[in-house]
Length: 145
Image 1 (cartoon, rainbow, N blue to C red):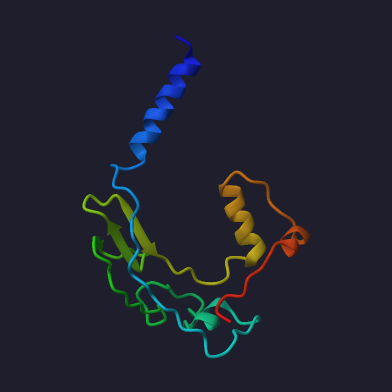
Image 2: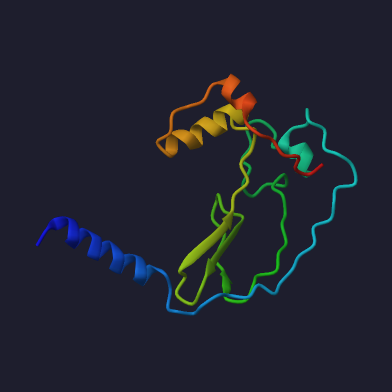
């Protein structure tokens, strides 16, 4: 038998198995309204200033000190809170057998700015880095005012 057919058959089986258990379309019934900010964000402000977090003083740890932001949330049905870790402020598992996870990590500082962050992600996805000129041509959206 031709290996091409074997591969196609195996891939088809894997795709069908991974598509779920025939549960059909799911209805989304929960809605959350997000309030608009009272004032536009200052474009020159740091992330900490824009999001209302205190800056971590140089030489201190962002974990476990008074500068760490505090978050509150309501855990959706089927989600379970897991113990936080040094980098995960919120640590949740999803599904009866922890089929997925959701977590929140707050990084201190800017990480080198937009170009450094974009190129770090592009490198992780095996994509070439982009130049400052290419970055300037990318579409933008206003977030948080």
